[in-house]
Image 1 (tube, rainbow, N blue to C red):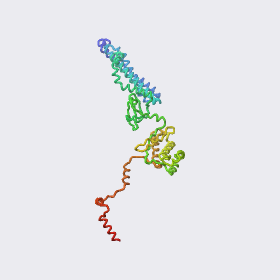
Image 2: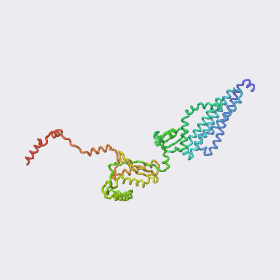
Image 3: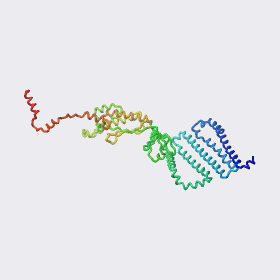
Image 4: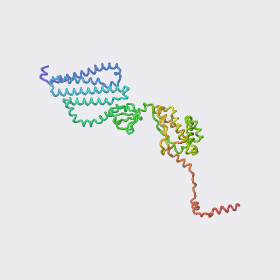
Amino acid sequence: MSEFFIAHPWAETLVALGGLFLSAFIANFLIKAILLKLLERLVQKTSFGQDEELKRHSVISRLANIVPALIISSGIMAVPGLPEGVITVIRNVAIAFIILTLALAVNSVFGLIDTLYHRRPEARYRPIKGYIQVAKLAVYIVAAVLVIATLLDKSPVILLSGVGAMAAVLILVFQDTLLSLVASMQIASSNMVRVGDWIEMKNLDANGDVTEIALYTVKVQNFDKTITTIPIRKLITEPMKNYRGMQESGGRRIKRALYIDQNTIRFLSDDERARLGTVDWLADYLPKKAKEIAEWNQKLGDRANNPVNRRQFTNVGTFRAYVDNYLRNHPGIHKGMTLLVRQMDPTPEGLPLEIYCFTNTTVWASFEQIQSDIFDHLYAVLPEFGLSAFQNPSGNDFRKLTINAPVEQPQSPWRSNVEHYSVPGTVSGRDERQQDALKERS
């Protein structure tokens, strides 16, 4: 046999090369079919082994791929008869495969860390997905440099020395990555946005809950169930409203105005004051205000006889006091937050009476229910104060005007012409006939 190999050296090379690759294949089979199966059974007994989300990262199976490559890279030099160039190429390819496999395994570890951290309560306040992506990117860059240097059979230092000349190009290529990284760090350090926050960006049509914060983008699930993807740097450079403060405070703001027809504003009569005095939320206000007005008018003396000089109750002022007391006693209004009922500058649409208060819930449906109930009631009681809400005339209003307008009787053109050309003081033929008929009757 040895004589055959001496006579045919290429046969010895093929046999040795085949044995090397067969050894690598057998090692790969033994590791994955036996060792990994045993390890998987052991892990199944733990909580990690029963978690499908953790198993998908497959860190151990990636590391198992290194063993065949190690056998080839170390055994290729023992194959007789191979040219030096072939040995170098096979060894470098095997080493490059090992580097790439290690990079994938390391990034799988990063993914596993991100998955485990995402389950912790603080992950909602301090997401690390952006940092994980940066770490993965750095691993891939280092691995790419090492793989290229290995395949070219050059030192990584020599390869990196040429990178300095390409710094400007690299900055241009990775501009979005660098900007996104800076924005991600600012958002995380200042706690601007968290997963689960309700944010609104009108210029990007985003209004909903943040579902994911990554290196490049932030995903927002809008309330119509659509998904808006926002470049993360937009959260720094453009206006963004975060409703987290409202949700954490326990109250949501009502800021809406009633537009009152200014033609209905007037003084209250004594009968109206007496009738409104029976209203629960005015029972304390009216006597106290009446005493204040009486003391003021008493100081005026005889000048109080002029209604312009003296103070009087107005229907809009009394209504404003009613609204204030009504809100302060409403079970759905937060008593520990700002509550205002104020007049705004008059507008062509009427006098705005603005209500500024907070509900004691931040749940959207409950908030809208409380707000609607309040304004339903206020619009309904406006006539009790002699007030009416302003609204622009509609088709029904113009139709009422047409129905109520006096109808002019059409006149005969002949009659109008006769009357137009008649001479004052003269009697027409029709008048003479009427006079003759009266004489005959008499």
